[in-house]
Length: 177
Image (tube, rainbow, N blue to C red; front, top):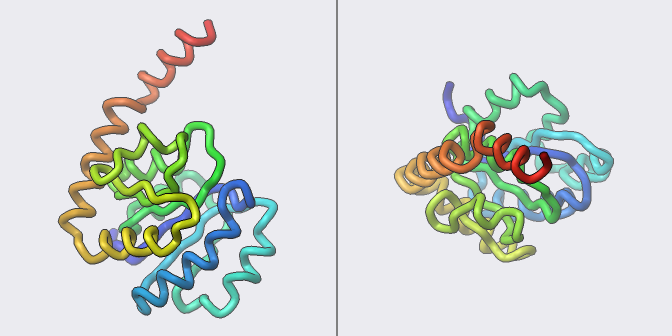
């Protein structure tokens, strides 16, 4: 598959998951790279607001909506960088999925991402609401495929080493049984 999506945002479309930060981020990314291609995959109670806020950006931004898990794999494969503006996660599933697909990640620096994202190695942690730094890091990865590929490979290795189903199920059984 070809990588025809520069930036992938995916997950629940809710305020606590950062939906209100997405339009500004998209605008800033478009200013930094006018031909950028952004896909937003997901659904939730903030769909209508987000669609309206993205009005006028359809040339660069595709709001895909809900897709099956099988189709989601294709979106990861077609993408260059995974981005999340989420303020709330338990175990950040879509970030781990993206890393397992060898995508470098750029996320807000919250405790639930620390340990999952090794800053500067598997992706970038950016201070919450520092959209300009987030944009800078995304554009850096899009402009440096060698760096992006190295981060993606290290992310995949980290997921295999620390977040496989076998490891997670062992932790769950130890903690709860």
